[in-house]
Length: 107
Image 1 (cartoon, rainbow, N blue to C red):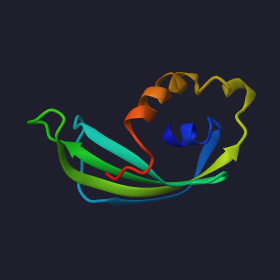
Image 2 (tube, rainbow, N blue to C red):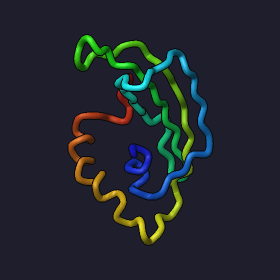
Image 3 (cartoon, rainbow, N blue to C red):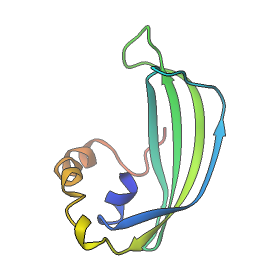
Image 4 (cartoon, one colour):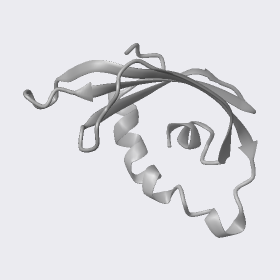
């Protein structure tokens, strides 16, 4: 979703994904994923994604990191006619999210 928004709501496709798994998460575990853009170009984007298992004993507290990945996306593709309104739901929340996070924030 972040890549779709960062590309001006154009279509994005993954061209490379590298992920390291450190620990497992079981069915029913709550997992937090945080994606930070490393590069936001006109035709490609690179994102770093970290995942943590949430601590079930304390609401909102991160537990151990369970995975880390880097994904490269092609982001200059046209959106098919039947999907032009697919990003409308995201646009409603984009303004609020932009005021609370920055693309250069560290995890």
